[in-house]
Length: 211
Length: 210
Image 1 (cartoon, rainbow over the protein chains, first blue to last red):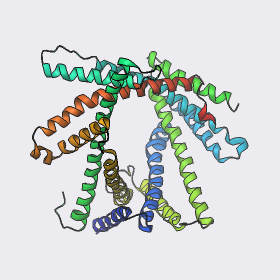
Image 2 (cartoon, each protein chain N blue to C red):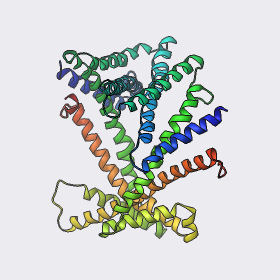
Image 3 (tube, rainbow over the protein chains, first blue to last red):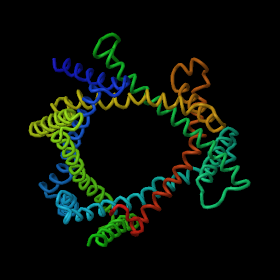
Image 4 (cartoon, chains in turn orange, green):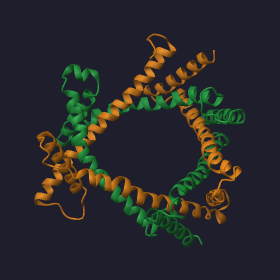
């Protein structure tokens, strides 16, 4: 019985959202506000369970070594709540923001260099004489694509002559990449749409066989 | 106090994180993992601020009887329903994020269909946007069109039926041509992110304090 109620609610809400295809309407707005309200509370519960309980309360209760250090993020977290105070005191929340920005900047500076910049550079240094002509051509195209794209984004010098032509080649590569990404995104969205249609006509209306 | 202390905090925390990467010994060694936990804890408090702001906004809508104020009641209905079943489930079971709990039932019945349909709805808007974007007005737009069409057709069984080489070409576009450009973009993004991080740590970029 619970399953049937669940399918009917889910099906009804699915149709509410799809009604937006007709235009902005009260039924869609109802579902939209329900979604915002439900997900706001969902994230509160999620954060309580996975962050506050598992990362703060459990280590303190279990007296894990180093748990006292959690005072630091808790202190800055509580400072964040000073935004609720009058303007005279609410600037204290900047300390927490500065703490988060500092951590984020440090992690990004290291993470992007180690996890993105260097691996991407390393992966671009490809052999051009492997013995397999197809691999050679592919490697050459990857190198040319990377360098020409970087040339297009190099704004420190006016692009003239050969550099301009190379930069234009970069635009070509970027367009192909964007086209491929766009096509891939459309396919991903369509597969989600197919999923919803299978749910509506399979699980709910039983017109088609559910997967 | 209002500007210098936050700048100092940003500098010290950012500097410690960078140093911890180069000094893999105590107390710096574990600091990177530790600070990620700290980051998540402070994020929890920012979420409270965000939800509070959302709740205040909807209370204001209801109080002032703004146009469409009753949608704010729907917001509160969804909010308190999820919060209530969440709290009840937290009291009843240790892990509420597993199938069988009331909370998971609500999640499966309300949040998943709403979220999936919201994203599925985008298929229609992306399709109409692609109609405008894919008009072959010049060489660049033609390249975009050809790449997108080959990837779309090459990724479905119909593409294989049409021409068995189509999926191979689609994969080649992805693995070679797209990789080249994406690598260029990613290297640019990484350089930009590192530069911005250093600007923040050194206090050159201060917009987050305004």
